Length: 281
Image (cartoon, rainbow, N blue to C red; front, side, top):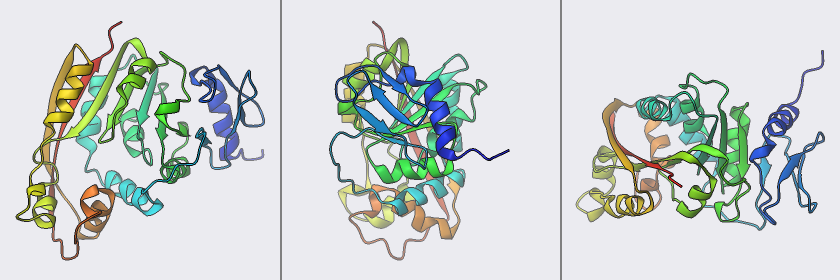
């Protein structure tokens, strides 16, 4: 029997779930055709790439995120630094959800790690990011997920399509989140707390105001958006191999504008907070 291509598997999976899609140009319903085109009634068309993702951008976008950054991010997440975060998010999600959207998903490792911990293995995981390199990396490593290059300002998804929206260490678009959530849906936002990667910050930003971190404005804005909010802080230390330290630096904004040579770490603090908002209509 001839082996099916990654593209054909992705076409089939997206076709099974094309009810989720809405044209980012005219907002019309979309259909996934056998040959791999995602089209609406007005004949706006987007092609599923050979790697198994679809690019829904309607205009060129420049991103500062590189392929190397996403490869580094995958290596760090695969090493287990965020396993406990994935465990706790999976508990919050529960077993009854059918559709999960990860916004700003990057190379998809958080979404895959979380979905892998759910008892409901049939839940449909969808990842979207404006950075094409991230989505290409996600499609390279992970099948049985829907990977989309797209901008939430021109969303390729139908309203009220998702049980859960994940927003992990990424900017938020709350108006769009509310449009996409089902009437009893949840938004799970992950924000860094004061101790997050403090060993790294202390060495990179020693004696500067950036050595300390606060997320008060981000948390306040979340509370302004949702009437019912649950908060859960997740704090633990993890050992880290020396060869992984440059990867950790590369995947975080900490390494973008500072001198990072000579950084010496043997453990890092993961200090994050889950903000869970419920969509009540």
